[in-house]
Amino acid sequence: ATVFNTTIKENYHLIEDIYVQLAPFKDRPAGKLSGGMKQKLALCCALIHEPKILFLDEPTTGVDPVSRREFWDILARLKARNITIFVSTPYMDEASRCDRIALIQDGHLLTIDTLENILRAHPATIYAVSGEKLYPISKALKAHPAVKSCFAFGENLHVTLQEDAKNISFLKQLIENQGFKKIEIFEIKPNIEDVFIGLMREKNNS
Image (cartoon, rainbow, N blue to C red; front, side, top):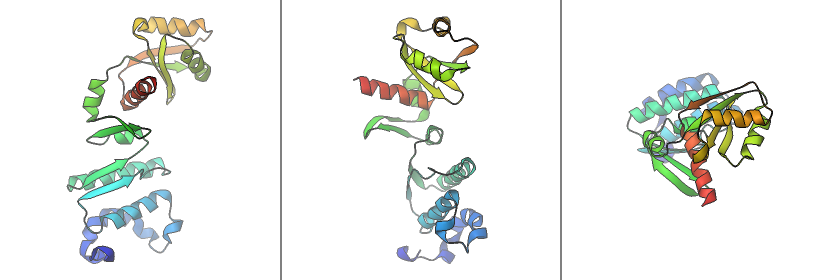
């Protein structure tokens, strides 16, 4: 606060809703706080002089899921106070909460737009595959020329096929021909992670 010629008392209203979560630990050294509490403390330090723009570099990396959600709820409240927030994150679900998204790989900008426009500009037919032995299924699919992409997503595989092989029946038969049974396949709408994987493939193949 003193660096920016202000005081905690003068601007406490700016950090009050965050600091109340830190108050029970006010006598604990900052280095001994949990990851989530350290980030909230850093946010208090960044907000105490009422900045117009806030730059956050992977603020929730290493933070537990509950604290991560709480942190983004705090950012939503800051946005409502007309503070511009520029954040980098490796988590696609966090990126989806932003007004505008820039997808970057190896320092190169792949695309930048709103979530809705990015999804609309990169339509794709995605098949979710669930069942047993997903890892060997994934290896078999990646080796097949009719498969455009295949990657794990939660408890499923997300699969895209080449243009001349786009249907569930073909994919099901392909998997069963490899000796795998007890699988389920259903079509889903692509999310931001599917688009990111697709754009990375296009860049790597260009």
